[in-house]
Structure formats: structure tokens, C-alpha cells
Length: 313
Image 1 (cartoon, rainbow, N blue to C red):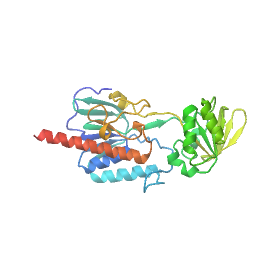
Image 2 (image 1 turned 180 degrees about the vertical axis):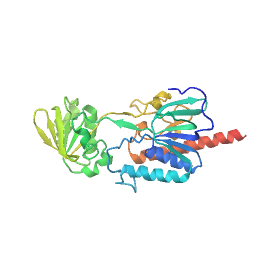
Image 3 (image 1 turned 180 degrees about the horizontal axis):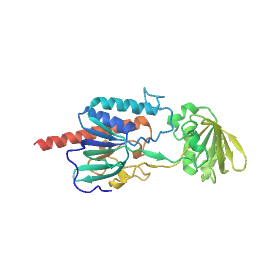
Image 4 (image 1 turned 30 degrees about the vertical axis):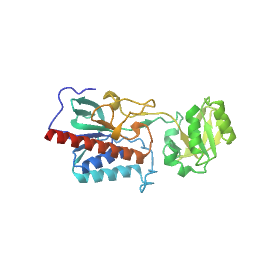
């Protein structure tokens, strides 16, 4: 995905380009902007938590609407005067010598000395009719984000094999009223079945027809055989994928689980290229993404400082 030609050196040139305006990108922009670096923050306004009504696990901000976090963050960044916002999707990127070029969907281009990717991941929802209507209200994927609100309530888990078993084990600390729904053959090992049975956790392998409820509140899981399982909540454990292909196109190395490999200060194997947030596929919490964005910003600023001193010699 090369743009071709030499990078622009005057118009639309920044110290750092950040792709992704969630907690990771915003936190990085704040640190770098306050370090007097010129920053371009690009965001397509398609967050992973688009359906979420509240943010959890973030000290002092627990319960805040995620969109309010973004609004306040951008407001603080705008006041610095060092951060520029482009609200559009970055469709391609290219490293040329020691600089990076990016192209937006609307055709705009920019270049910078360093590039930080914080584009996040995309969740795979259960392939059940109605799942999207309940997502973010009574269908969730993260116990640490929403387990407290579901504590002690009748809850279903959607997942097969190790993924389903792992989610049951994770949720057991919040509620023991659990049923594992595998929507077909469970794929569980005999040992896993014995453990679930020992804890009184049923496994339903019947294919699922749909989810039933009103106004985003789950009431029951309807199976194709006509049976109905009353449940207040459903958690699922399905793979998530990289939202953007930029990391791959730029030559980043990946871990076995599909996350971008990082080293010191969230640096990648590509000089000058950093990543932060869920695309690392480590701990998927907003507070961790923000911390990773801060770490990456510190590494970027240190690198820029060393380069500036070397140029002055």
C-alpha cells in the first residue's frame, strides 16, 4: 500500500501521526501534545465499544459513557493547540526512509516522523438472530467490563471448546447461575465436562433459533427444537480481528493470537512505528489501552528527543 513519490515535508507534516482516537490514541496524543510535539490524530469514529452505554474498570471514570470520554479527551487536546484532528479513515500507509506517509479515505495525505497505530479490533458477534439488538445491554463479551452488573443473575455463555469453558470459569466469580450454550457440538474435553457438571453448570448443545427480549433486555434463549431457556444475560467468547490492515501492510510482526508484537515502549519491529491498545491483544480494558498509549507516547518522545539532539551535533 505505497503512496509513491517522496514524502511531503512542509504541508501536513507532523512529528507524530496517530491512527485511532480511542483511549489509547487520545492518551498518547495528550502526552505528546503536552510535550510540544505536533500531532495528527486520525479517527474514523467507529469504536469497538459502539454499543456500550458505560465504561468500567477505569478509576474515577467508572460508569462514564464511552462517547463522553472521547468528547472530553478531544476537548482537552484541542485546547493544547498542538494536536490536529482528521475525522476519517486511514486507508494506506507507507514508510519512506525515516518518515511515514498516510492517505485518508477522502484523499488527504500527511507525513510524519513517527507513526502510532491504535486502531483496535473488531468483535465477532454470535451468529444468532437478534444478537446485535442486545449487544451492549444484556449481551457482552467482557466479564471485567460488565460482570458486576450481572452478578448473581441467570446468565448464559456462548462458546465452544476451550473458549466456552474459559468464559464459564471467568464468570463463575460473579454468578454461579450459568448455562453454557454451544449452538451445536460443544467440543469440550471429557475433563472439562466433568468440571462443569461438578459445579452444576449445564451444557446445552442444541442449535439456537434466536434471542428473545425487549428493548435490549434479554429474557430467553430460544432453541430450534422449541425449548426456551430463561436468561437475563449472555456472555460470548469468540475471536476478534484487527480492525485495520495498516500494521500488516507496514510489515509488523504478529503473535500467535493475532496481536501485534511489541517491545520496549510498545515499539514494533518497524523503526519509528508503535502500536497501543487492543490491537496488541493482551488485556482488553480501556484503562490498559490508555496506559499503553501513554507508554508508546513516552517512547516516541524519547526517540524524537534523541534524534533532535543528534541532528544538532
